Image 1 (tube, one colour):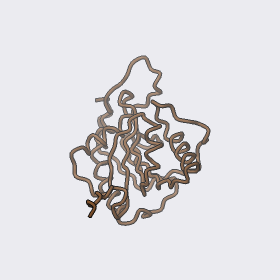
Image 2 (cartoon, rainbow, N blue to C red; image 1 turned 120 degrees about the horizontal axis):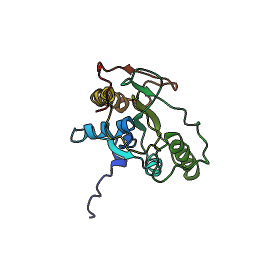
Image 3 (cartoon, rainbow, N blue to C red; image 1 turned 90 degrees about the vertical axis):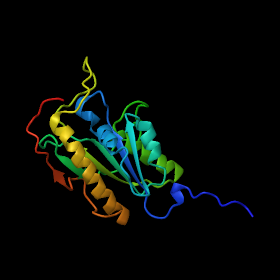
Image 4 (cartoon, rainbow, N blue to C red; image 1 turned 45 degrees about the vertical axis):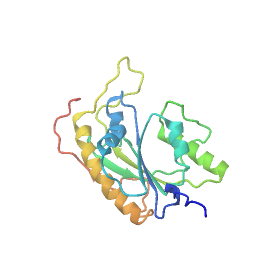
Length: 202
């Protein structure tokens, strides 16, 4: 009699969801994604939900998207012209982006990452997950070529971190029940605004 083989996570019944924080912690509000993942550390998550901070590792994220997840939620700063601290849930068009543009090994351009993942999935006949973006309207936007780094979130974006965690709890619960729940066009699904009046950089 052979010993029972442990069941891998990919073989467990039910949907699999990846929550991926992305952004540069040295570019002010671009650190929103990593900060949300930090706030989730130590919190229990349901079976089938993986939480990871990818920072600026675009190539790593592109390959992780091929690991058989049903849904991937990318958590990122997302300027859309609303009040700083506004949260959005957006479903991007995976056909956008030039598949010939490969993300830098230490860079994070979500459009390039999704384009690369689509190319890799076509080559390997792998299934891409449904992709959602939980974005936060930044107050401080940096290009990355400034002479000095700016670690730390602005006040309205920092206030939005806790609300983002609660929104992820609700969103993942919905998606675990039905990974195709709330089919969306590439527009905001929900908008939450923080009440912070202090716009200073923390």
